[in-house]
Image (tube, rainbow, N blue to C red; front, side, top):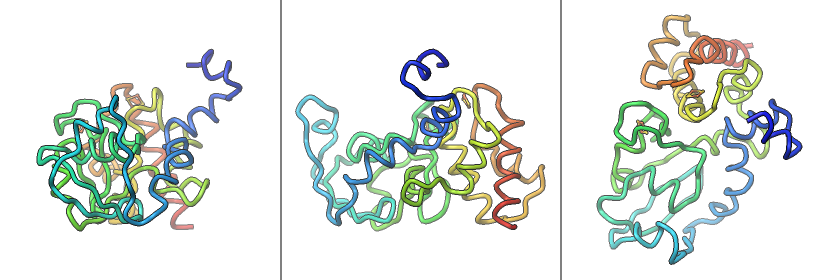
Length: 208
Ligand code: FES
Ligand code: FES
């Protein structure tokens, strides 16, 4: 990662900021969700054509109304990543076991790989891109960057979403409550000590 990021003129911290928080996704992809009733372009060579179906779906994604037709078996994460190009949300197990695909559904954490898109009918979905205020990271995202709460970064969007939901529900968590609250999100790199530190730091900042 070091060589690659260096060759593109990014410091490790800049790379982490972008890769780990969905910042790239936010900057590039928000225009696609900038209008109500977003028209989804169909590329014959992409998975989108396969995923488009006959079932009307209307929901809000990161504050924007989206209307689309999907197949009955399209999952929420397929809708987000393959239709709406919100690729900040990651897929690891694709089986409801690891938390990498965590998003907020009406403010509650859900595994988007384990939920049908049609079950989000009329609901509000927030992805990691939706936490940002323009180009500004949320307090939780910033805390993960400052405390290096990641290694490879693949689980990080899910960790950030879980932490955001946890701190909304419990603004003053103890270390044990953070461990419990984040227990649905696995990190294959074992970056747990830094992840916990990041969440506690975010809590401190939100309460100061
Ligand atoms: S990718 Fe959804 S829970 Fe693992
Ligand atoms: S930072 Fe690599 S899986 Fe968590």
